Length: 210
Ligand code: DGP
Ligand code: NA
Ligand code: NA
Figure 1 (cartoon, rainbow, N blue to C red):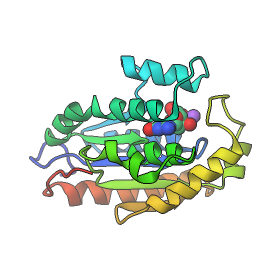
Figure 2 (cartoon, rainbow, N blue to C red):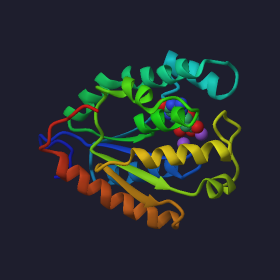
Figure 3 (cartoon, helix red, strand yellow):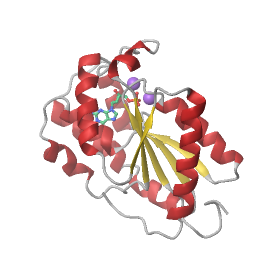
């Protein structure tokens, strides 16, 4: 009755936000909530650091390797492309995917380096379009205060401010902006409702491409 096994497809639900916006913990909480509801669900994240492309990305983020801005952009995109067919078969098989970051990270982070937005969006065209994008909105300064950053390449306040501006310009009708500075339980509750609505609404809709 909720997306698992009644013939409907699963929902593609994406969480986006700045580093330290609370995205990853909220993904985990949403996932266990949906599992508890008996909904077929998997938690995914991009970059997926387990593939060989993902290992190159991980080394780059840890500042263990240097790559040209366009080269790393295309690797992040390739990391989503290499998962596209599995993503499609999971969704068509009725599994809902809760995904920590997707194409919007791809565009916002690279555009924040000064790359042309149109150029940044181009390699994302043809990836599966999310049914719902939840943007966890936190001020870059507040995010930085949350236990500090982990030391990866993009974890600097000035850079995150530019990422936030680009995220802002990417918002479309599938986006729901949730105030990530609210108490964790409040955010969690809002995500549950958005996800449940999305799952029941998308069962009869076709999958589309970005
Ligand atoms: P995470 O594993 O969610 O902490 O992401 C690692 C970092 O990489 C984080 O600063 C966000 C950034 N990032 C995620 N996806 C992309 C992407 O597609 N392109 C770029 N340039 N950066 C990304
Ligand atoms: Na990070
Ligand atoms: Na994260």
